[in-house]
Amino acid sequence: MPRLLLFDIDGTLLWTNGAGREATRLAMIEVFGTEAGLTQHVFGGKTDWRTLVDLLGQTGVTSSEIEQQMPAFHEAMTRNLAAIIAGYHVEACPGGLALIEALRQRDDVLLGLVTGNVKDAAAVKLRAAGYDPGWFPVGAYGHEALERDVLPALALARAVDHYRHPLQPDDVFVIGDTPADVSCARALGGRSVAVGTGFFERDELIACRPNHYLDDLKGFLDILDN
Ligand SMILES: [Mg+2]
Image 1 (cartoon, rainbow, N blue to C red):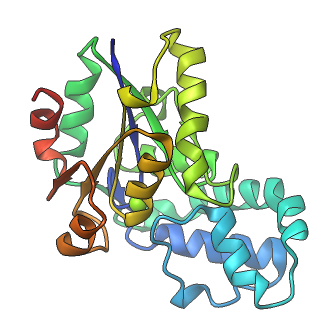
Image 2: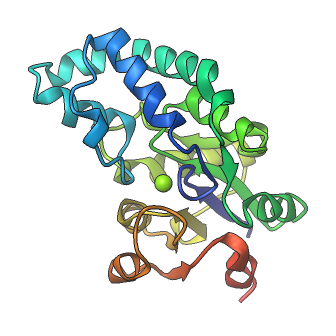
């Protein structure tokens, strides 16, 4: 049975070095008229939906207004990101491009995404770092849930449908750089791989008891083959 690998984006596959935060700011001003407290916000594995609720809740915007505006935010976020991203030094995390290239040659793994980004913005980020979004035909995204914990099950259901394999939670690896990534793997009943290329220290990630910890993606094939 092949294994389904669900990758996080920011801090795991790539760094946008500020482009994501700036596009979020522009989209929030456009759609909600305020950036709220965005400059101090810790994204840390949150879905974009959760980020909006956390920030805008303090300014009196209700959760249902945010839900109603999510399609507008999705569009504005993507458009603003696409407009500014060339001005930022977006780069793949160490070993990321080589790993995905190697995985694409294998018939025992299936690729997908679990990310807090809204779907179309995820594609813009991937392209800017040298990944083809088409390499990740299934995923679950930050406009689809407040809580990241529900995203892996969504991605798994889509993978079963798309790849036509009866995959089980135990066949799934969730790879990410935050405690929220480890938590959402656990919520599914899948395996977690924490990587130290984001904003969390090695000790903080290990304290979350992931199934595996890696300093970066270069060691990932050893996990898969052992
Ligand atoms: Mg991340």
